[in-house]
Image (cartoon, rainbow, N blue to C red; front, side, top):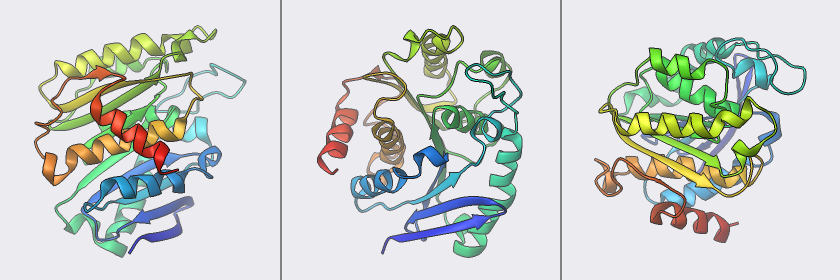
Amino acid sequence: MIMKEKVIIQGMSCRLYGDKSAERIVFWFTGAHERDSVVGVCEHLWKHAGQEPFLMVICEVEHWNAQLSPWYAEAIYGTEDFAGKGKETLNWLQEACIPYLEQQYHILEKPGQLFIGGYSLAGLFALWAFYESDIFTGVAACSASLWFPYWAEYVREHTIHPGSLIYLSLGIKEEKTRNAVMATVGDATRSLYQQYCSDPRVAGTVLEWNPGNHFTQPDERVFKGFAWLLDHNSRKNFGYKKYGKKRETNISAPEKRNAAYYESSR
């Protein structure tokens, strides 16, 4: 039976969707602007996962630029600076959210896997959190804000943990923006992907190119990111031998099947 619950965990609104006894737990960081679409993505993922269930924990932040930025940076667009409260958000996840889930559903007593992901700035936060904590097996950084100031320097000074699964994606028009800082996202994403391909600590990685700009089909992009993680972690594909480690594409068979499934099940 699919569990659908909404809870408040130390001030943050969370939605729980899936099987509370599942071995795979996915943490998806979102904002209020994604509130109307998250359940639809979860429903499609549930159908896609088939006989291997998961529990999705949707964590909705109230202050997007503040709570998801790993450090302070001046405004790149608009007037709101990035307050750099990502550390507080990660602390909340590890010290409040996960203990709550453990108490309520005993998730850490199961030999499962924890994943984290998000879109845009939430994708950057997820990838940063993946570096900062070794509790996660995989990360889905969908159209992540890898243009963020000093991100490249951060990556050079930090290492990923062994056995990592890393999904990256970007729209083909995202780097064609007039904003000079945000226009660096294409090169930043390509560079990071190439680094992961040569890193022996990375068990599997992919860079998925999608049509359109940053605002084109974000729901489908998130679906494909989490579907990739769940597919690679499934019992039938354990070891990632089916897909291999390195793949930069927008036409690969697994992703084409996932996209087609998402469209057909709407």
